[in-house]
Amino acid sequence: MKRAARYIIFYASLFALWTLLAKLKIWPPYLFPTPWGVAESLYAGFQDHSYLIAIRVSMQRVLIGYGISVILGMILGLGVASNKFLEETMGGLLVSLQSLPSICWWPLALLWFGLNQNAILFVVIMGSLLSVTLAMEDGRKQMPRIFGQAGRNLGAKGFKLFWYVLLPASLPFIVSGLKQGWAFAWRSLITAEMLYLSLGLGQVLMMGRDLNDMSAVIAVMFLIIAIGYIVDGVVFKGMEHHLQNKWGLTTAA
Amino acid sequence: MSTNAHNVSSQLPLPVPARFPAGTISPGERLGPVAVGRPAHRPSSAIAKVGLREICLSYRTEKGERLLALDHINLEVRAGEFLCIVGPSGCGKSTLLHLIAGLHQQTSGQILVDGKRVDGPGTDRIMIFQDHGLFPWLTVGQNVEFGMKMKGIPKAERQERTQHYLRLVHLAQFERSYIHQLSGGMRQRVAIARALATEPDVLLMDEPFAALDAQTRDLLHDELEKIWSQTGRTIIFVTHNVREAVRLGDRVVLLTFRPGRVKNEFPINLPRPRSLEDPAVALTAREVLDELREEINRSLEAEYKEGVKPRLDPNAEGAERA
Image 1 (cartoon, rainbow over the protein chains, first blue to last red):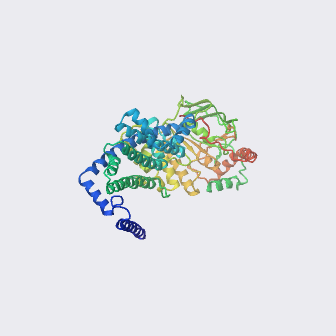
Image 2: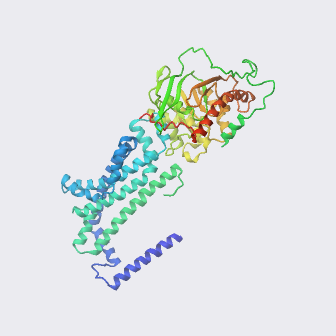
Image 3: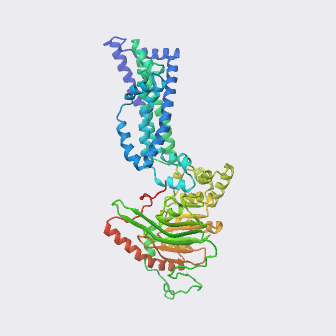
């Protein structure tokens, strides 16, 4: 209860401050809209379905891109972790590549794929693949070896060993990496969508700028934050919670 | 740890009645601990269940020197035999079990099961690990089912057999629990049920009770002996606890400290069911221990010299099969 009260006080004062600043009209309203101006934009956006369409398109892209990242990243990470040669060579390369902002792949993607959906997907994949790969590699190394031994001993090998033993055994160690990968994927997507006008939340955001509609810009920013937060808070928190219950891990995430 | 405490107490001179000084009891006497200090020669009527032929294992240490871990091990295990392997820590007894399980590859020599060469893991040989190796993401029931699932046994049969083996280890009501909800003794019982459920011919037990408290261990000794006599499995049981070995085994094999060689074999012909407290068990254990002590001293010497615990980590070398 106390915590809830603190939250309410914090956000109420934030809201009050915003309203106050907007009311004082230090900046013109088209640069600094009121909260209800933003709320109206949100409402209108949902009303004419443009936000829903944008959300659907963006979610579709991020799910496909992130999904490919997870599958590829797991295979790559597992390969790197279980092969000394790969670990020494590719391990370093992966870490250095991670310092490259994913949007730097955009020009390359444009030339390779042209101005289309695939270019966006490519950037999303490059944004999240590395963190998933590194997380998987790390998870595979942290995972107690006894699970692999017990699994092979009980007759699991090849894909079955991976699917029924190595993957679930390493999940608690890779879930934070998966989460990070998601955050990267989401950011990369919005960035790419802002550069390439083809539906999606990023494009709606840029449209607000083009129309000089600051309320719409802030409304879409809220949407982007909300979706990122909901996926993080619901999907990944739920997954962590589930794993902790099963494994009996008491350490809070 | 209670196991260590137990070990220490069994190393102390035991209150042996004067008329039974160690080593003077001839086989066939009523008390009958046949603990003669020479290798057992048994008429091998059929092919041994498990045969180890000239097993050598060497590996490279971090410093780059070659270390011989196992040195020409020869062993024959009869079908249905309960064989215990004892030795000081660092003698490679656990590693030997990993080799039989097919989880690691020996440097030279052959491992035969039913006369056929072992070439990788197989569900005819199931290992029970000291830290149980149960899968924490599965329920107790799913753990027991796991091996059968890998074998492709239909679900209905899997469930029936899971029930059966969980009942056998008195854990039927815990089928839906997760591993972390169980005590150490219960976890080992699940591990036993999981191993039995794949219906292996050979159970490989790697110090399975070492981390348990004394009461739990006693109980599990009784249960294991019962299960063994009911199911007729061949058991190869590795322990550093001589009394445990004598209490459980038909035969106790003593390995030397680094490199591991078979130093001696002791057939144990004491009547069953036995208990750790049986004077005959204590008496026989003492004879084994007398020989083991030399090896323990050697291992301690090495420990002082090297400043580290000389321990063969079966995972350390690059011998693991891919």
